[in-house]
Image 1 (cartoon, rainbow, N blue to C red):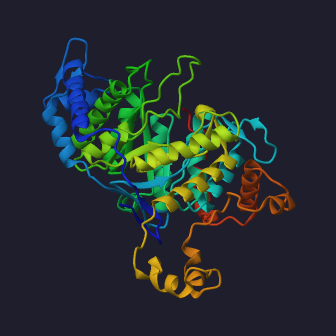
Image 2: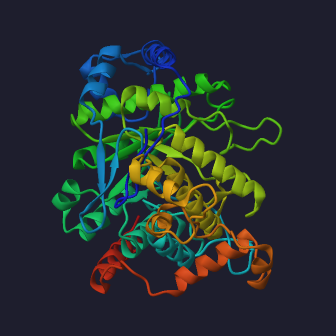
Image 3: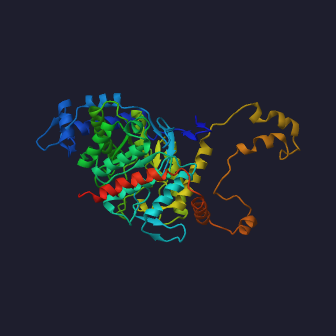
Length: 482
């Protein structure tokens, strides 16, 4: 069944598992075999030492072999629910079960300018506009940076992104950092905005998304970030990201087993470092390399397996949907966004990110994000719980109207017509009415909605004093002799 809180707009998804419990157990057994018998490479002495002290074995090739009892212990202590707060300290996103939340992605190298329709390199002001747009869209639950601005020092781009997100949205933030020091600086900025380290720890409104080379190779900076955030008791997204057919087996379940071996190793490390650390695991299908084009894909239909395994472990997850391989906002972009968002929702993905992505993650579009917002709105309408009672069944009004009457001017219609789903962007006019209003395409309407939102006064901005403090962090890093 579906449950929707009308106030919070939290959708508890209809669940469509792609793997059975038995199949999930088989994949789990494969993960344990990979971890214990193949071994994993850890590029940080502290991580290797921690596992060896706990009972893992290191071989002559410097690979760590982790026994299954450490996996089981970590699964027992890792929290099954992670609550993310808004900037004001109010609980906003309970990441658990089949509850679904939606947001954009990060770090696109290009933007399709909604004003000109041209693809170009993004600027810092584009990212600020994108954050403000996300803050205003009712079906976007969390914010990511979306763009990699080209007009700032690339080595400091993650700090500029964090400053923009903290300054221009109240919603929970998922951030990335390009090296370990960037993670430290971003957390420092979040602590300042929250009122201090203790306040951020109690009511975390930021989560670091840590990309790991692959399930069997955990790079130094990923492990450094893991331990740093664990020491702060802040939530972590730890996601090995292989490419099926290149860095993992081409088969969907084979690439899943390899990636999730890495997920479980990260989980063990987090719990050994600090038992009870909140970890959000990967719910993303390992992307595969299209062997015809050599493009790493985002929108393949082999979805739902990773989510099924995360649900098997009963762990909160970071998922992916709303992206497209299309190069522009067109029919393919709309179709792939709708299909992937529905698939991810039915699979019970929790934090579903990458809404607004085009060109296989290389380009972002505000217009596409607005379209995705409307698609999610439709999905929530599809997934809502129905009241089946005497009033909604309309027995009395059916008897009153009879076989030859109509319901248009009845009190029953007046009372209930607003309960039906109405679009905000999708078009329902008659043909002539549509022409009279300009005969605009979906792309044109979405671009206009973007501009309407951005033309309004910014809401939820931080005080000038706090913005100046956050910008001071960037200036201090720039002036430091690195």
